[in-house]
Length: 143
Image (cartoon, rainbow, N blue to C red):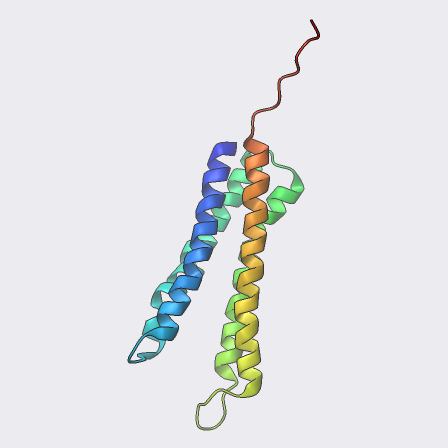
């Protein structure tokens, strides 16, 4: 079960890394087509990452992982909720012409910073899962 936790948490880390790629795809799409440019980013953030987070949390519980590891496993779900809130605020704070305001741009920047923080949490989870799955050292008897 602990090896499965390592695999699932590693897949979660890959999903978060891909989020940055998918955000760049949306940002650099020419001609800009609107929300469709961010479809992969949205699907990964709204479906893949939450599903992997639930899976890692269940595996951490089944592995009888310490509370810290279980906390690290569930934490990405909270980060995703904050991401959705930040994106909605950034998109909602436009001027009358629909252009971004300085406040919207700052909140949009916080969306990116929150993503970076999330990656650090998942890296800590992967490290903790690997440590948990590592075989216990064998004590040698003196000769």
